View 1 (cartoon, rainbow, N blue to C red):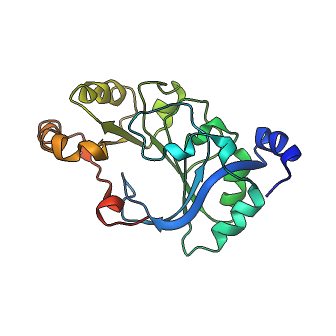
View 2: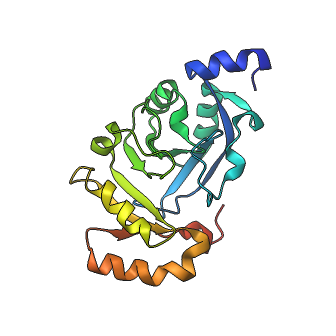
Length: 212
């Protein structure tokens, strides 16, 4: 961990980042669901989704600041070469240093983001999950490999279509029920995907299986 007086400068440059947690697990959602993955969850988010299931990540100051080299060393101790960078909102930070060093070490990198800030870093897979309070920057629509839209109510299907119309034709499309609404909204989700087969269903399988 860095000394307090060093934190701000190194975070601003991307040489260190506030980290809520990092751990080896199974990816539970979206295109890579079921795949062993090392997660690096950054602290800090101002998007403010009321249904967020990691609200403890929002305040960056509550989390230790770790140097990129330390993060890379921890990743090497896992059994996978697939890393997911998530948050919080990871693109609040400059991620060039982190991504380049992980790629140099042979890792395959995915990022999960709302796209609310400009993208930095190099990525093998970009999962764009747009949020209404801070819609994505336009650059993400051409770059996204996966569009994953959280469905909280029926109006969110319209919201999903707005973004699906902007991504590339090769982008994988997923709809995912917000966990607290799974019993109420799952029947509507099933019917919607059956009637609109360009979409796929994403389940939070880690929650069903009690995987951290």
